Length: 259
Ligand SMILES: [Zn+2]
Image 1 (cartoon, protein in one colour):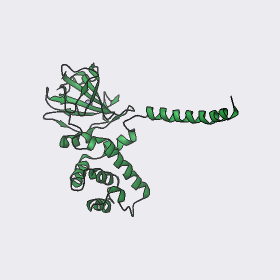
Image 2: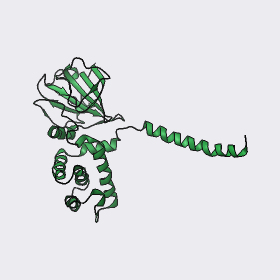
Image 3: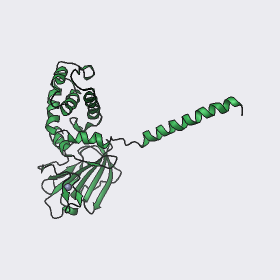
């Protein structure tokens, strides 16, 4: 082999190796965001989301995300920035005078999350119980005498109330398990796993691998599995792609108003 060819190979091989490593990392990165990202989204209070939608409506279709990122990150000193948005300034043209650079960076990052993951967008998700209901925030509460933590929200109602899919996706698990009883697991198109447990009955004809639309009936409310002795309720859980369960409570309160 001529010398020049070998030289080219010495340069090309490590380059290909590096490119391969980058491609591998990109393919194996969870598509649905990190725990940090989702912890932020799950922590935004629903009333603040609804307020941002009200304020944003008067400005432009995406302005709610600008306002929400500002209000949730800089609760005390976002006033002048929100005022600029209301005067018609674009987010990218805002004057950040008096705001620390790191805070401005956090606002910008959170705004991209709000636009990328549509949990707070109007009409993107549906409240999973179609009927009279009540619920509170019990995420993280002890279960079985502290052996487990509660990894979702319990939505109470009467037996037989329709349970619907909060988002579009694909049925990943279906049928009986010890804790969940009759349960349905949907892999949402957003990458998250949506878990509906203690159903009285799963909709007949539902099959694993099948696509479901947002708002499609999955079954009816019951108290199966470890809910046998508790009042009828839906246990609703959200697991992000890296395996962490996140608190659905604030999302539910927004979907209830927006779906
Ligand atoms: Zn529960």
